[in-house]
Each structure stands twice: as C-alpha cells, then as structure tokens.
Image (cartoon, rainbow, N blue to C red; front, side):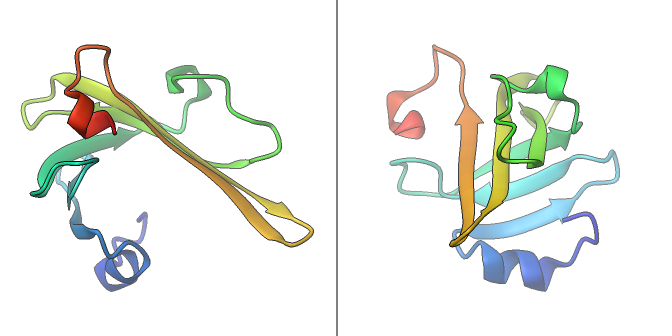
Length: 109
C-alpha cells in the first residue's frame, strides 16, 4: 500500500475494487463490506500509532496496520487494526474493523 502498487493490492484483495492513496494521505477503499450487496467507499487514515488501536495489539502479531476509518468529509466512522505474525507453520492473521455501536448490523456482519 505504501508503494501505491494497485496491481499488487487488487490481486491480494480481490473484493477490494479500488484502493487509491489520496492526496491528503488517506487511502480510499471501494469494497463490499459485510452483508451489503453493493460496494461501499470508505477512507482509511493509517497512523500506525498503537494509541489509535481499538484494542491492545497482540504482541505475537508484530506486523500491524492501525488507523481510523472516515467518511469522505473526514467524519470518524470506525477503526482498523490488522495484525499478522509468523508461526512455525506459516503465518497467523487477525484482521479487525471496528465499527461504532450504532453501525448497521448488516455492515458489521
């Protein structure tokens, strides 16, 4: 993502229809979220600051993507905490999107 290599990102995440680094530093992601039938556009502002994590990161998963989810106009919508770590058999991943309590349950599912 840091290299803005769209071909690699779209091959790695086929449900992401577009992943674009915006001029303001955010990443816009067009993808199908949860049980919704159509793609939605979300904006992520990755800080990599553990204080922005929705829960304490797992020390066994040291590779992390931490940040905020926002609307197009910058209103807070949620948080992201993706974590990955090596194991003896390959790797383990814990991918987390944290929505507010008032979020549509179909989106959360």
